[in-house]
Image (cartoon, rainbow, N blue to C red):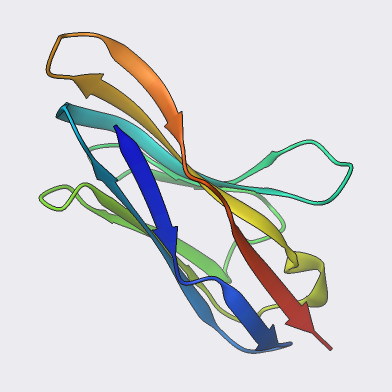
Length: 119
């Protein structure tokens, strides 16, 4: 199973970016999907998560500004980021709890995509 992210880049403060993460491979189903971010020298922190049924959870720092969504038919999770702030600058990683066709559950991570917000 592979998770491939896209959509990172640079934005001005107050601007918007949309991240996408598509899962492919021997997938039977995907449970939770999520976005994390990591600053240099810091631990990876949860930004937002979404269950297979569409229930969402957000870090306090992004509530009201970021929206996580998913397309189960495409095995893809999205993160719409609006009202961006310089402190949102980080490498963003997607995460998926995948039930493979062999019947095993594994956690997978994307390769990371840089988001840089300038003031």
